[in-house]
Length: 125
View: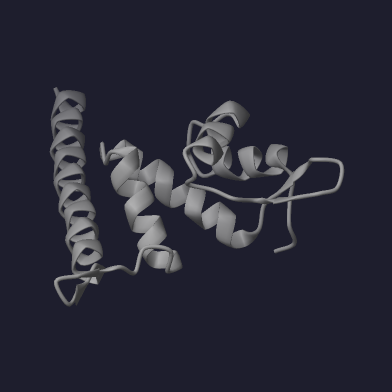
């Protein structure tokens, strides 16, 4: 995928079911969750990696993961946060946060399944 402008990012994400606005993406930049390339004239250009990162952020926020935790995860993944902590790298923290996301996602999936079953029962009545 070639790099795209913010309006195209919005279109792609909305087609994928995400509720997003340009101001929200700029907020993520201000929170240092994103760092898209900028042209000489100041336009932002987003790569495929940026798009995946935005999807991750949106999904994590839907799961009520705090922004500071998302930033921590992104920094660990990007290698910005590889400080030793008592001789143990913080990858263990990353694994813990990612497991938390997986666990919350599984709970959400169960909730949706139960909700869907209830709707089906109501339709049959």
